[in-house]
Amino acid sequence: MIEIVDPRGVAVVRTLSLAVRPARGDLRRVGLLCNDPSVAHGTHHFARYLRIVRRALTDRLGAVEFHEETKPVLTRAAEQTQLDRFHGWQVVINGLGK
Image (cartoon, rainbow, N blue to C red; front, side, top):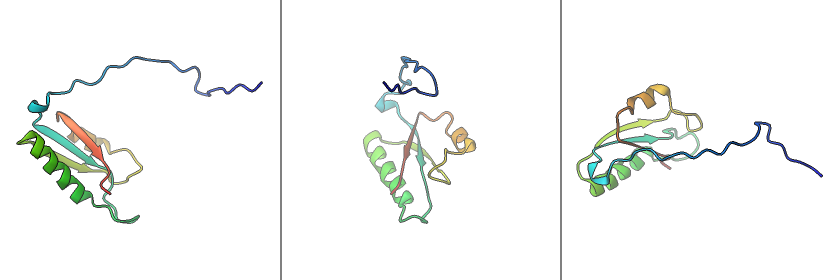
């Protein structure tokens, strides 16, 4: 018999709770994090993507303040300084503008 062993050890099952979310009517500060501005690997319409998301959220939520950041490299995590600039925002939406 072959036994498959996880090199990380025994999996620990934890119960986590969801983050506190403001009611839709209370959303006034929304952060938008777009994954990659480069055009090296095809056409990335990140500016258009952010405009569409802003318009859709404004239509649904009314007056909303936005803060936008774009990750410099798709395959890497956002820079810590970028994440720090989202501190205090009610919601941050991450997306890929392709």
